[in-house]
Every structure is written in structure tokens, then in C-alpha cells.
Length: 539
Image: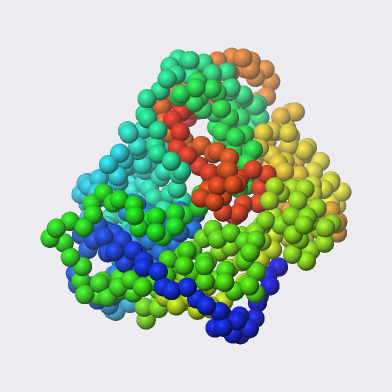
């Protein structure tokens, strides 16, 4: 549900209100330094005729930079500390159309040369404590022969949860993107040293393994009875030596993990030190300088917030500002978008009934009302206001589906049972039936049904079924203990980093944005752990 305030009325009120004087902004100086650093890293020439930029403090603050000259376009997304997280180049074809790389062509760059270029770019694009490890390479004729590489970002020589993709074509670097382009991790990367020994960690990890016996496809139209490890994400904390179930840890935060880190305010972001800085001998073009100059008199977010709070009709008294982004249009007009948040409480229901509030509060630790306001970043003139509420229609619970399947798929239902294997019949309200042969599940053949408890109607129904599958023998399977011994004996223990969720301090405005509706919100940190590398086979 959204409610919109009358723009005309608000404009009249704002015109009669005193707007604070424009505050001096460091955004143009910071942007100039950032642009120089990016140009040096990417070898951006001075022939581009247009330049555009925007700032988004979102959950993880970043700058978007874009150059074009009628035949080329270059877009770059970099974090507030100067880390380049996303690059994409466009070129016009000979026919004058913008080329996005879909025409068939053989690679113009050999595999070895492309890999050498990719490794060189990874060295330039990663931070001092980082490196890029290429794990795979591919090329398709449908992509104009572009050679693509993918892999992991390493920190201090250890694997991290951060992945990257990089593409090389005849013009050099075509694209680059990190999985943390629009996300991030709180705090510094910990040491690569482990206090826990590999043998101790291996013992804990091996003891946590569970196997399930069921039929799996053999790739030749048949099915073989196998012991399969239950999917788990078990690690040993390299500092404490504690065995941790990462899946359970994430599940304890509901669906809100990873969204709790608020962006640094513009003034703070501008004060961050950059690795390169404005080195002597480098300069910006007149086009870049003219574009950057538009930010010189943009009001910082505190001044914008003060001017909006001076308008009583906006009702911001109980709201906290938790996001402020800046965008610039083709004419150099800068718009600031501010997002405010306020928690609903029994004493602050925003017109909703107490019964409705209680229904939603039972499954969400916080019910947040958001107010979105856009203003002219230079004058503070109001442009738009909207408000959204966290309450909506009824939610569905799990429902019985057997009567429906009896009517529409009796033959398949007759050969199936409610699947009790790990990973099936979760909390999404549906029921999964899996085919059974000789008392063992064959989860490659399943039926899934979810119904609406309020109406009794079927909301979701789908199935996967192969009537001609040939099942292998099931008599006298290997003993479970022997299967466990064979599997755990093939495990290898490695030291690395994982994304570790930590609970948010709701009283800390830097961490909590009010963006999460879950039992416990959290932020992500990178933590050193020891984990197993599973064998490629199952006994």
C-alpha cells in the first residue's frame, strides 16, 4: 500500500518555509580525485565528449561514472573507497548501431593472450591485499568471440566468497564485475593465520557428515542406489576452533541477512583516503570538469534533511534518514533522493488497526514505514513524496495436497510418498512427493503442490517425471558406517574466508537502515575458517 502527499500543497508549504543556507559540499573535490584514479587504472583516454556521474549511498556507498563519444561508451561502478567493482564498454558497429556483442564471430584474441591480459587486468583492478584467481575460461561464437574468465577474489592469499567475471575482446577489457559490486562486508579482513590445527578441524568436520541412501540418475536413463551427503555448509572457526553450521547460522537471521549496513554519509565518503589520489601530471578534460562542477554547490544530506524537517506537513518527526542518493540528468540538474524510516508500534499505527498490526508483528521483529522524498539537490526544492507501509494481504500456510493429486495425478501419486529427504518440504507452505522404488526415494521424480488455506485453491503445482527410468538393484547396499568412512576419508581441509553474519545493533544508525523485515537482521563480515573440500564422487 502506498500513499502519496499532494505535491502542489507541499510545494506551497515549502515555499513559505525557511530553507537553511546552502552548505559547502566536498563532493566535487572527491569526485575529481576518484575520476582521475579510475581513468589511470583503466587507461581512459581524453577523447570522450560526454561524462556523467551519480552517487548512491544505499547499503554500500558507490559512484557510477560514464563516458561516451558517439562511438564508444564506458560505464564504471566503484565503491566509495575507490575500488572498481564493475566495468562495461560499448562500441558502435560499422553500420552505426550500438554493438553489444551478439553477432557471431571467431575470437580475435588467442586464448593465451587473452588470459595474459585478464591476469594483468586483475592485478590492476584488485586491492593491495587482493588477487584474482581464474578458475574457468569460455568463449562462444554468439558473443562475437569474446573470451570470458571467471574465478575468485583472494585476500591475503586465501579464498573469499567474492567471485568475479572478466571479458577480453579485440579492444582489450570489455567487462569486469565482482559479486560484491552492489554489496559489501563490514569491517576489515581478518588475519590469514589459524589458531586451530588442520587435524582437529578435519575431525570435527568429518564427524558432522551425514549420508542419505536413495536413487540418483546415472546419466544413461537409469537410476543407481547411492549414499549421498546431506547438503551442509559446515566450517570450523579458525580462531576459536568451534564447529559452525553456516546454513543454520544464516537461517537464524530469517531473510534479512546482508542488508543491514547503511552507506556512509556523503561527507564521510568524501573524506576517505584513496590509494592513488590526484597524482601529479594527470588532469581531467574540460568535459569531465564541467560535469563534476555540477556537484560543487549540491547540498550535503544533512542540510537537505534539515530543510525537510522544517516542513511539519511532511511528518518526519518520528522518522530517521537512512539513505540519500544523488543523480544527475543530461542537463546537469542534480536530484537528491532521501529515504526515511519509522518503526510501527502499538502506539504508532499510522491508521491501521491494532489487530492487523498484531498479525504482522507476530512474525516480524520490526514493521517499518518508509517515506521517499526527492528534492533539487542545489536548492532543496521538493519534487515528490511517497510513503509505503509494511502491511498487506493474508499470508499462506502449508496445506494438505493429497486430495488434489488423487484427482489429477493418481498414477504418479500411487508410486510416491511425502519426501522426507533433507532439503524437501521446507517452510514455503508446499508439499513435495517423491517417487519410491523398493522402499527408497527417487527425488529426480517429484510432484509439488501448494494451496491457499483461505480459499482452498491450488496456488502452485508442478512435477518432474520419467516413466521409463530403469532402476538398478537395491539389495544389500553397503553399510552406512562403511560409506561414511569412505566419504570422510576423501575429505580435504582448507583455510579460507567466509561471509559471517552478525546481529545488527538496532540503536546504531550506521548499521541499521530499517530495511529488513525478519526475526533478526544482520550485517556480513569476512571471517577466517577451515572447511572441507568434498570429493567429486559419492560411495
